[in-house]
Image (tube, rainbow, N blue to C red; front, side, top):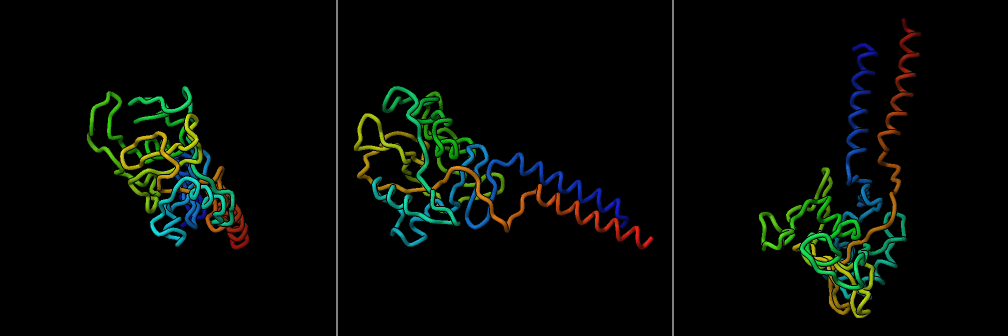
Length: 231
């Protein structure tokens, strides 16, 4: 096969790889780290790492213990892990609705890293639809993957955020991954913890498509020089 043909085919493949990476929301960075490009945060692929790491029997803990666990967590060379953010974006406390508020079902996902993941990225459906109808088709935690990237041990139960409940400091915001409810929960209750950190991570073993493109360009140049010498 001629060098020009090889170059054309390889370039086309790399263009498709670049396009796929640019359009993907979830990008597997390897070593159990998943980059969420929509929210510019990195999630642990294992959503119940507190259990699988042996830290806790089942991974469920009260809010104070959850804060302690995530604050002391070191994984993948990073020690700035935290619990997801949920923003109280209405009047202080729960502004319950079936659509578009900070509390209830089908919430305003722009203010919640957990809700954005559950609704917008994974594409799950809440227990109530936006009109308040109960159990619409496909409701519940039916999807734990997107863009060909899957999460492990995402439990169908409440998960803590790292944000206290403004109107009651005995509570904190949480998100129920079983049926898409967001609201305040007593800190003494035991729920799951899913670690996240701000920004992307760089894993040398998984080159970015742009890096691959530069590497390929260099190899093509070397091949061209050799071809001219042998002609």
